[in-house]
Length: 92
Image 1 (cartoon, one colour):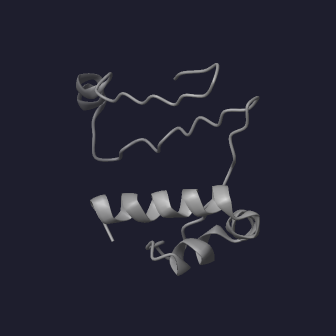
Image 2 (cartoon, rainbow, N blue to C red):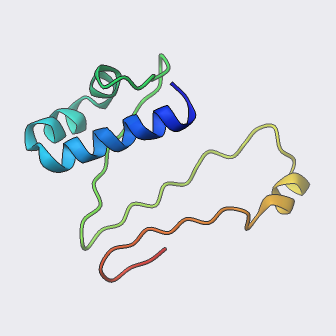
């Protein structure tokens, strides 16, 4: 599953976790099994950690540095990504 299908499946997992405390507990305890059961491909050997943002804690995920880009390439794309995460008092 790639692209839009994967994004939709991810959205369904998040919505289900928001509405079903038992599902959320299973997702946090064994994310790989739950994601696979929900139709998301998880590569063998990949560790998945689920963290929950709260009104007083925001988790910033720093992606792994691409191995196929030079420092000059990275300088050219810096600032090319925009993400907005909003809560009642916080926008990143």
